[in-house]
Length: 343
Image (tube, rainbow, N blue to C red):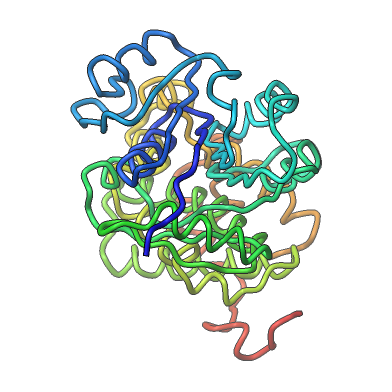
């Protein structure tokens, strides 16, 4: 059965936006990638490579990059937004007049907007209310995707037709797309796991054991679920690819930007030095501050997130994280089997 071919616009020429463009082009869709830097656009179009974000990885001929928003968005019926959370609103407002009614829009950004503690889908609903909105999230390290290593992801939306369209557009022999109606939970999982990727990098730098790593990751999942329930998401979502799957990938891979920042902090670099060395956005750094603050407001027990806030922003010693885990209040191992699931 033939799949409908789309005109796809990808806003954001970072690693993940480039990876999505690569899949779409290989699947035969007209694919336009918006980048801010004309030199990067030229390198993609002429050398078939994104030298800043994915050096050495060949891109298919069908990816066309440009810094011209009009060119990218003209006639597009699918839009993927893959810009950092700090630039999300600016880009949405800049692009708004060029986006047609009922266009399918997918956020690929795993972050939280500081003003109002809004997720990216909520910003899309506010800024582009005339569109149909979904979220793509999962254990999706961009370099592995362009290397065609088999990968699973989640398209989340209450709009089942949108989910089916994105599944058809992106699925291929190395990229499998599952659906989930819990858009808020899927997106919250993608944002929260960045916190624990930083923690995992810190732990690796100071040489924790495998018992310690397993303990920390499992309690991280408990923190994520606990916070998600308080925010109105379904904790069962966190047992899927966008929850535990993404957590495992980003907390155990040196390809994860948040893991890299945490590792460099653990090696003694300052936050500014670690971010400068990375040269890319690590969403987890801002998410730590926002989530730790919101957890205090809501009285949600999150010892890892609060310890990370103190280590990074208040310059507490690294053993603060271990002390919080080992000395905090005792909780059930699997909390929601005891307390039930909130609707």
